[in-house]
Image (cartoon, rainbow, N blue to C red; front, side, top):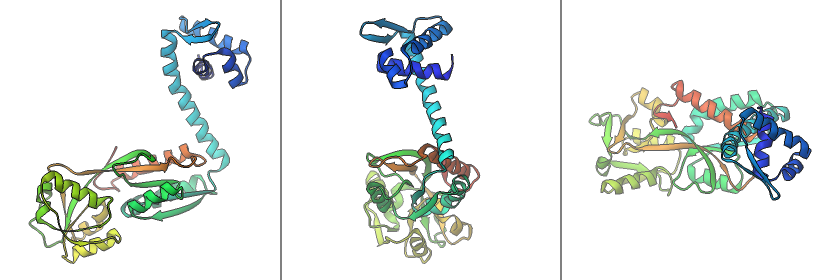
Length: 308
């Protein structure tokens, strides 16, 4: 029993006919008959029922078909991986990410991509979640890394990480401990985006669940950096993952208390659009993204995040 025989078997069962499978594979009917005879000899069971209308798998054949599908998928992935190295990768790759994710991941990702695909031109876009969604929808972005919205129906998404969210307060707020209950958000002056995406939606949802009203003293639709400076100045607090404020926490410029009761976690995913064809070497690119993100987290470079 070998992978070629299993691939032939899958094609035969899928088409329901030796003749159709032979046409699809560009092989002789007799060749496929020998494949079935070889498999049945190896397994010592009948795998197919033959009739004038074609072939159907026996119970043993169904079991082998299901197991063979995994082998066929792995073989196809292996071929795709080799193919991308042969063609040298896509001519251009456009990657988008939200600011915190971009700061942590895009430099090591870019280095890895250029090492393996030196002829591929990279274009990096940093933007807020709503903009990234629009770019994905329009097909202007090949791959995006961002905090996943509730509705991802128009995207092909793999969840990469789970990341804890914290209350981020001015350094003078020494009364805030290591954790902070969600029910207490109503008593905190907050600085949040005005957009109907991301942290604003998250905060409003948490407040509704806790039965409290948010005290939003300022709205900031600029970068995370601007929001952090507003918090440092004492204008209010905000909610962010600790990775977004790691430097400021280390320098004592901000304080962080992990939100609890319930614990608040966001999903970070890698996404492509369903409205466009996959890029050349899609599988190999995704593998690189997964490997690099995993390495960053395991090496301590992404505080507050865990592999999904």
